[in-house]
Image 1 (cartoon, rainbow, N blue to C red):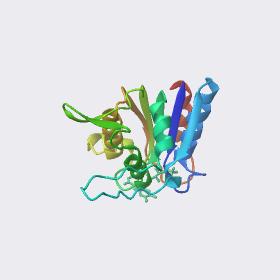
Image 2 (cartoon, rainbow, N blue to C red):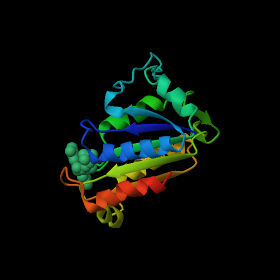
Image 3 (cartoon, protein in one colour):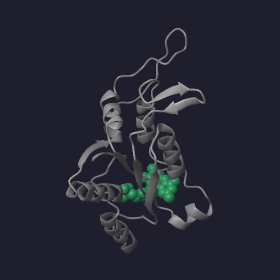
Image 4 (spheres, rainbow, N blue to C red):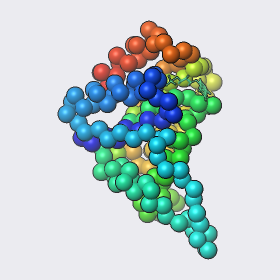
Length: 186
Ligand SMILES: Cc1cc2nc3c(=O)[nH]c(=O)nc-3n(C[C@H](O)[C@H](O)[C@H](O)COP(=O)(O)O)c2cc1C
C-alpha cells in the first residue's frame, strides 16, 4: 500500500502535530507500507494566472504530488488548528493539487474529482481549544473543510482523530493517550 502523508506546521520539530505524524508514519511503515511525506510549508506558493480568455493557466509545480496522489491508496494529513481551521500552507497545497483535467473534470453534474483511487483519508488534528468545544458548537471547520475537499476529490472515506487542550510544549496524559491510540489505527 502507498500512503501520502502531508504535514502542515511551520515549526514542526517539537510540535504535537509532528509527534502524531511521526507516530503514524512509523506505524504504517512497520506494517510494510510505503509512506511518502510532504511538508505543506515547503511546497511552492500557488499564484493562479489566467490566459486572455480568463481560463486558469495550468500550474506544473504540483505535478509530482498529483502523480503520487493518483497512484496512492491512502492519504494522511496532520495539522494544527490555527485561527478556526488548518494553516494556510495546507490550503495552498489544496489549490496546487485541484486542477482541471488533472484531479477533476466537468461531468454531467458539474465538476467532479478523479482521485477515486484514494480509499481513505485520515486527518490527525491538534488544537488549543478543548475537543468538546468544537463538538458542541459544531465548529470544527478544519475537519469539515478537509473532509469535504477529499470526498469531492474522490476519496471513499475520510476519518479524523483529534486532540484538544494543547496549550504548552509539554505532553499531557490526554495527548499521550492520543499518540498511543495511533498504534491501533493501522
Ligand atoms: C497562529 C495560531 C493560531 C491558533 N489558532 C487556534 C484556534 O483557532 N483554535 C484552537 O483551538 N487553537 C488554536 N491555536 C492553538 C494550536 O492549535 C495548538 O497550539 C496546536 O494545535 C498545538 O500543536 P503543535 O504543538 O503541533 O503546535 C493556535 C495556535 C497558533 C500558533
